[in-house]
Image (cartoon, rainbow, N blue to C red; front, side, top):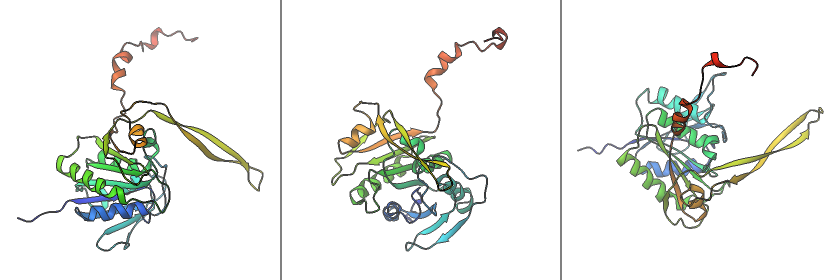
Length: 264
C-alpha cells in the first residue's frame, strides 16, 4: 500500500525570508509535501486584513530545495486565500500551519496577529490549522527547542482532526528547555498604548505608537501563566465571536421603537 503523505500549507506574517518560517518548513518536510505562500515583506500586526483596493501578485520563488514556494504582495490572509483558490484550486490541503512568529501571540494579541489570522483563515476554509509563535523578536532567535513540539502537535492534529471552526494557538516561551505543554485558555489582557508625538520637516505632526502589555488575569489556567512557568501554551480558539451567554439577557431588552420617547 502506498503511503500518501499529507499536503501542508505553510504561511506566516514575518515574510518569506524570516528565520521562523524556515524552521517550520524544515519540520513540515519531515511530515509531508510542503507548499509555502508567504508575504514578500513583514506583515506583523495586520490582523485579518485583506487586500481589496489594489491587485495582488504571487510569484514562484526557489529558496529551499524541494519546496514549492510563492511570495505574495498581500497580507497573511491574502496568502491563504490565494493558496486555496489558485494553487490548490479549491482542493483543501490536509493542514495549514502558520509561523513560527517572532514574538508571542498569547492573550489579546491573537486579535492583532497576522500569524494567527492566517491560521484562522485556514480554519474558515475548512482546513485544520495551527499558529506557532515564540517569545523572541530577534532574527537570531533559537527555535531548536521548539522543533519536537511543533512536529508532535502537527502530527496530533493530522491524526485526530479539529472541530469545525476551531484552530490551535501555540506559544513557546523563550527558554533553554521547555517544561512541557499546557492546554490553556486565553488570558485576559490588553495593550495600554502611548503615542510619541513628533513633527516632520514640513511642520506636520506624526506619531509613533508605543505602549505596554497589561495582564489583567491572574488565573493559573491561562496561556500567560503557562508561559511564565516555562511551558508551551496550546489554546483552542474559534472565529465565531458571538457572545452566546449574553443572548438570553439581550432578548429581555425592549427594542420596540414605537415606545421610545423622541426626545430621548
